[in-house]
Length: 141
Length: 141
Length: 141
Image (tube, rainbow over the protein chains, first blue to last red):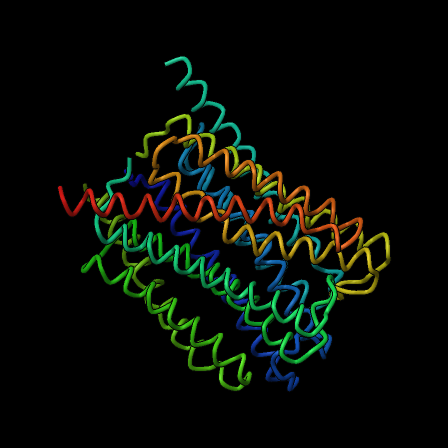
């Protein structure tokens, strides 16, 4: 059984938050579908609906990068273990900013996107360092 | 090494079934693409194709919510361990119903969608309770 | 704590590569958006952009099948443990070939798609065998 430290449980909690963000992007799409009378299976028809759908798709694309890196960095911790769930929380905040900005105006999506991307980049670096250190420890052990 | 109980192996088996459902939604898209002569990269062109493509995308969106929650609930079990893979099986059944309903008529997608959403909601509750209990156990321990 | 063998660390390294492939498909979409002046939230407008967007979506669809099977096969190894990360590397190579082929001509996407699909099929078989063997070991133990 995996030993659950507080840092790992915080990664679990951040994962739940990230799932809720993805879920909420779908709720907004459903709301816009009904507000603008866009019948399924159409995925275009009103600018506000189109923005909501792009927010959902982009969040899904980014979630697919984020979640594997979050758990690689969680399972192979380096330095301060809390840095990993902290970066996860930054991602969640970035995606909320992205959604809020994009729904007002697509030009306002950059800040939230950048915040999320910085978190992904941080988790990427932690994952690579974690894998490399564990590999060296195995090889020299 | 993770200790594999029967409940955890059932979650693994349900994960394979869920992957197969996602895979099958893509097979149907490919079949509709060739049936209606819709050349890639177009993703619209015939009502039946459009429905198949929405089924695939919606299944992918829901899978991204489902799978992380299934494994959080599996790794942090509360009460009856078999409840987690049982909810996973409910999700798989819901998504098959969704696909079958949607391909006949988009208005018939609600039942399957709801069954899948109930399973996701159940896994969400189990995950949150599991994380909270493990956190309290660590803090008091 | 999970015991990290060299084979498991190679699966982790392959996961990072797979995430980078997904990330890169998004970079190409962004580049085509700006090259052809396609304003968000539009996801169509120029053949080259349309191809890039389909590459990104198809890679995401396949990644959702690939990653869970990679880790089921990694956590429940059968026979030669290195076979699992080796199949993961085949998937990464297949998706790079798919992207390169598709961007030249959608008709040239088949080779890369097939290479990726063979890797997914191999991981599916390893996962099922791994689950079945672990189940039998638990039942007879």
